[in-house]
Image 1 (tube, rainbow, N blue to C red):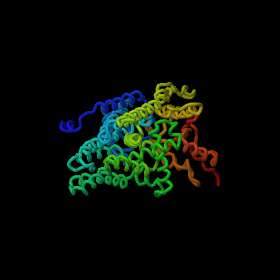
Image 2 (image 1 turned 90 degrees about the vertical axis):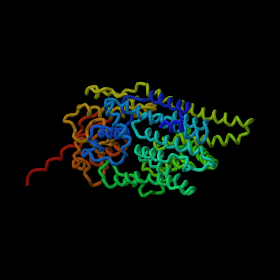
Image 3 (image 1 turned 45 degrees about the vertical axis):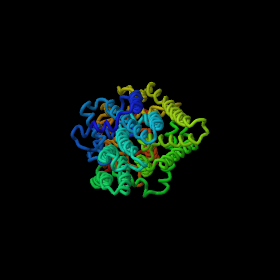
Image 4 (image 1 turned 180 degrees about the vertical axis):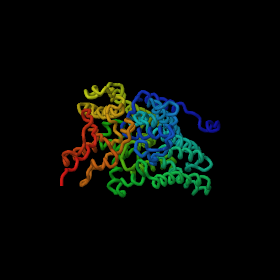
Length: 543
C-alpha cells in the first residue's frame, strides 16, 4: 500500500477542488429523498433488502422477484450505510454519494493533469464541479457518483504510468498496473452497467499493447473483462422476473432504426455543447451548443494527433457510443465524462490560443488559464439560482391535507421544486406537492381500508414512499377492459398523479372513451387522486 502512495502521491490543488465539491454538495443536500425519478427509490429498496437479509429482490413488486437489472455494487454500499445508520435519514446515503463524487473528481484531475498539464487538468475539473447537472447528481442517491470514483481511479492509475513511457506508446506493458485497472473496471461495472466501457477500454488498450510487444499478460487482463459483463447479461436474460431485462431495454431502439440513432446523435451533440456552456441561455441556442461541441471534438482530435490514442480516449468513445445505443436520452449518461469533455474543449482552445498573434509565447498559457477560470466561474454563477431555490421556502399544503393532518411538503427539498419561475413554475411545483401529499396520506394510513396493491406511473417511487407494493400502470388498449386487467393482477387502488404526461393522456382517454371507467375516487388532494377499483355490476336476475 505504501508503494502505491509513493507512485501516486497526493496533489494539493486537485485535493482542494475535491474539497470544494464536498462543500458545494453539503450546501445542496436536503433531508428528503430529493428526486422523483424512481432510480433513487430503487437503489434504496435494494440496499434495504440486502441489509435486512431479504436478498437482492424487487421489494416494490408483490412477488418480490430477484432483481437482475442494476448490478449489486452500489446497493451493497447502501446496505452498509443502512446497517450502520439505519434508514431514518437520507443524509448518510447522500454523503456517501457526495464523497464518491468528490474523490472521483480528484482522480480525474490527476489523470487529466498527467496527460494535458496542470492548467487543463485543474481547469476541466473546475468547469465540471460548477455545472448544475453535476451538482444535482452529486447528492442524488444514484450510481453516477460511485461510478465516477472508480472511473477516476481507473484513468488516474492508467494515465499516470502511461505518461511516463517514452515515445507516446499506449499503456506499455511494463508501466501499467493491469491487475489494478481490472479491479477498478470491475468495481465500476458493479456500480452501473455503463461501467462496461471500462472493460472495453481496457481490452482495446491491452490488444494494442499485445500487437506491439506480443506479451500475453496485458491481453489476459484485457480480455478477462468480458467474463463479468457476459456473465451478468446471461444471468439477467435467463433468470427473468426482475424489474425489466436488458433484452427488452435494447429492443426499445425498435431494431436499431437509423432514425432513433440519428435522434440520439443530435441530442448528445447539443448536450455536449450545453455542458460546456453551463447555462440555460447557452443550451437554448443551437448554434452556440453546436459550436462548443465542435471545439470539443476538435480538441479531442488535436490531443490524439499530438499524443497518440490513450486510455481516456477509449473511455470517452465507448461512453458516447453506449449513450447513443441506450433506450432513453439523458444528460445523466454524460455526467461521469464531463471532465473529459471539458479537458478536450480546453485542449482545442489551447491550440487556438497557440495560433493567436500573442506578443510572447508565455501568454498562451496565461490566456488558457484565464479562459478556464472564466468558464468555471460562469458555471458557478449559472448555478446560483439552484442554491437560491434550495434555501427558499417552497411549501405546498392544500386544505384537504390540513383536514387529514398531513405535514406540508417542502418543495425546496426536492429537485422538481427547484429552478421554476413564474405562474407556470408555481403550478408545476404545486402539482408535485399534491402528488407527494397523496403518498404521505397512504404512508400514514389515512386511507382505510389500507390498499393492498397499487398501480401508478412511478411504481418504484410510490412503493418506497408509501410502503405498499405497486405495479406500473398498463397501457390502454382497444377492446380490452382496462380496469379488469388491473383487477386480474390483484390491484386494489390506482393513483392518478395529475402530473406526468403519460398518466394524464391515459385517464383522459379512459374518460372520453369509457365515460365511467369503473373507478371510485377514494381520496383527492387537488390534482392528485386515489381511485379504488369499483366492483363490476351484478348480473340481472330473471329468466
